[in-house]
Length: 108
Image (cartoon, rainbow, N blue to C red; front, side):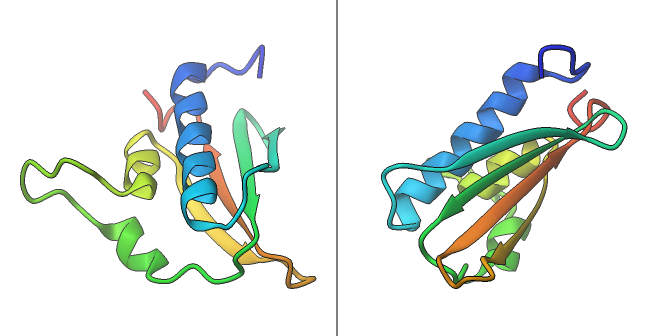
């Protein structure tokens, strides 16, 4: 990350949103987080929790503000920072992993 040409501050905000979601909704207090630079200039962020399901993922991801809402869904915030988001249940059934992929261009 030290030489990643993207906005590291915004990337750290995406990490914070995903960790907050894992703590609030994922039944976990110690949150595994993985960061890796992939392909050319993309950063992959992975955050895992203990709940394999992600109810209404598509709806939450597609949520758009329609007024002065006080609390915006965390995934919407991460997406507004330029993150491409996906999730999958862990193969061993131990929970799920949410992935965010960031490119420097998406965060400009």
